[in-house]
Amino acid sequence: MHHLFTTILIFFLPFLFYNLSSVYGARSLAGGWTPINATDPTVIEIGKFAVDEYDKDDHVSLKFEKVVGGEKQVVDGTKYNITITAVNGSAENNYVALVLDKPWQKFRELVYFEGPV
Image (tube, rainbow, N blue to C red; front, side):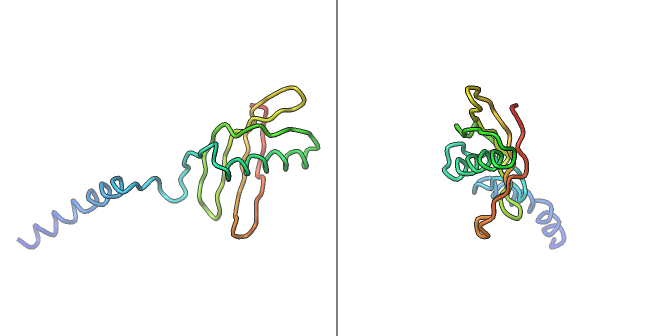
Protein backbone atom coordinates (compact mmCIF):
# COMPACT_ATOMS: atom_id res chain seq x y z
CA MET A 1 0.00 0.00 0.00
CA HIS A 2 2.84 2.40 0.84
CA HIS A 3 4.45 1.74 -2.56
CA LEU A 4 1.19 2.60 -4.38
CA PHE A 5 0.83 5.87 -2.46
CA THR A 6 4.42 6.87 -3.28
CA THR A 7 3.91 6.07 -6.97
CA ILE A 8 0.72 8.14 -7.12
CA LEU A 9 2.38 11.01 -5.26
CA ILE A 10 5.38 11.05 -7.61
CA PHE A 11 3.08 11.02 -10.64
CA PHE A 12 0.74 13.83 -9.51
CA LEU A 13 3.20 16.11 -7.69
CA PRO A 14 4.43 17.91 -10.85
CA PHE A 15 0.83 18.63 -11.88
CA LEU A 16 0.09 20.05 -8.44
CA PHE A 17 3.05 22.44 -8.58
CA TYR A 18 2.26 23.47 -12.16
CA ASN A 19 -1.32 24.34 -11.19
CA LEU A 20 -0.23 26.23 -8.06
CA SER A 21 2.26 28.30 -10.04
CA SER A 22 -0.43 29.32 -12.51
CA VAL A 23 -2.83 30.19 -9.69
CA TYR A 24 -0.26 32.33 -7.90
CA GLY A 25 0.76 34.20 -11.03
CA ALA A 26 4.05 32.72 -12.18
CA ARG A 27 4.58 34.62 -15.40
CA SER A 28 7.56 33.10 -17.17
CA LEU A 29 10.68 31.08 -16.75
CA ALA A 30 13.90 32.86 -15.87
CA GLY A 31 15.53 34.11 -19.03
CA GLY A 32 12.26 34.16 -20.98
CA TRP A 33 11.02 37.22 -22.88
CA THR A 34 8.01 39.07 -21.45
CA PRO A 35 6.04 41.98 -22.93
CA ILE A 36 6.88 45.50 -21.80
CA ASN A 37 4.57 48.34 -20.85
CA ALA A 38 5.37 51.07 -23.41
CA THR A 39 4.25 53.79 -20.99
CA ASP A 40 6.44 52.62 -18.09
CA PRO A 41 8.87 55.47 -17.21
CA THR A 42 11.85 53.08 -17.18
CA VAL A 43 10.96 51.77 -20.66
CA ILE A 44 10.60 55.34 -21.96
CA GLU A 45 14.00 56.20 -20.45
CA ILE A 46 15.48 53.14 -22.18
CA GLY A 47 13.96 54.27 -25.51
CA LYS A 48 15.36 57.79 -25.15
CA PHE A 49 18.75 56.34 -24.25
CA ALA A 50 18.74 54.15 -27.37
CA VAL A 51 17.99 57.09 -29.68
CA ASP A 52 20.59 59.33 -27.96
CA GLU A 53 23.30 56.66 -28.20
CA TYR A 54 22.48 55.96 -31.85
CA ASP A 55 22.65 59.69 -32.60
CA LYS A 56 26.09 59.94 -30.93
CA ASP A 57 27.53 56.86 -32.62
CA ASP A 58 26.20 57.48 -36.12
CA HIS A 59 26.16 61.30 -36.09
CA VAL A 60 22.48 61.60 -36.98
CA SER A 61 19.76 63.67 -35.38
CA LEU A 62 16.83 61.42 -34.59
CA LYS A 63 14.32 62.81 -32.11
CA PHE A 64 12.67 60.31 -29.76
CA GLU A 65 8.86 60.29 -29.95
CA LYS A 66 7.65 57.19 -28.08
CA VAL A 67 8.10 53.50 -27.40
CA VAL A 68 5.63 51.53 -29.50
CA GLY A 69 6.12 48.09 -27.92
CA GLY A 70 8.59 45.35 -27.25
CA GLU A 71 9.74 42.81 -24.72
CA LYS A 72 12.30 42.34 -22.00
CA GLN A 73 14.44 39.48 -20.79
CA VAL A 74 15.96 39.23 -17.32
CA VAL A 75 19.43 37.71 -17.51
CA ASP A 76 22.57 39.30 -16.02
CA GLY A 77 20.66 42.58 -16.08
CA THR A 78 17.64 43.29 -18.25
CA LYS A 79 17.64 43.22 -22.04
CA TYR A 80 15.03 45.45 -23.67
CA ASN A 81 14.11 44.63 -27.26
CA ILE A 82 11.93 47.61 -28.16
CA THR A 83 10.32 49.32 -31.11
CA ILE A 84 10.69 53.10 -31.01
CA THR A 85 9.08 55.86 -33.03
CA ALA A 86 11.53 58.66 -33.83
CA VAL A 87 11.61 61.65 -36.17
CA ASN A 88 14.42 62.29 -38.64
CA GLY A 89 13.85 65.74 -40.10
CA SER A 90 10.21 65.60 -41.14
CA ALA A 91 10.03 61.80 -41.49
CA GLU A 92 8.58 59.76 -38.62
CA ASN A 93 9.70 56.13 -38.61
CA ASN A 94 9.91 53.10 -36.35
CA TYR A 95 13.24 51.67 -35.24
CA VAL A 96 14.18 48.54 -33.31
CA ALA A 97 16.73 48.67 -30.51
CA LEU A 98 18.25 46.23 -28.06
CA VAL A 99 19.50 47.76 -24.80
CA LEU A 100 21.19 45.98 -21.90
CA ASP A 101 20.51 47.63 -18.54
CA LYS A 102 22.22 46.89 -15.20
CA PRO A 103 21.02 49.66 -12.89
CA TRP A 104 22.85 48.33 -9.81
CA GLN A 105 26.14 48.82 -11.73
CA LYS A 106 25.02 52.09 -13.36
CA PHE A 107 25.60 50.34 -16.69
CA ARG A 108 23.50 50.72 -19.83
CA GLU A 109 24.57 49.69 -23.35
CA LEU A 110 22.99 50.01 -26.77
CA VAL A 111 23.60 46.58 -28.31
CA TYR A 112 22.00 47.33 -31.67
CA PHE A 113 19.74 49.85 -33.38
CA GLU A 114 18.07 49.14 -36.73
CA GLY A 115 15.72 50.99 -38.97
CA PRO A 116 13.66 52.39 -40.20
CA VAL A 117 11.57 49.24 -40.07
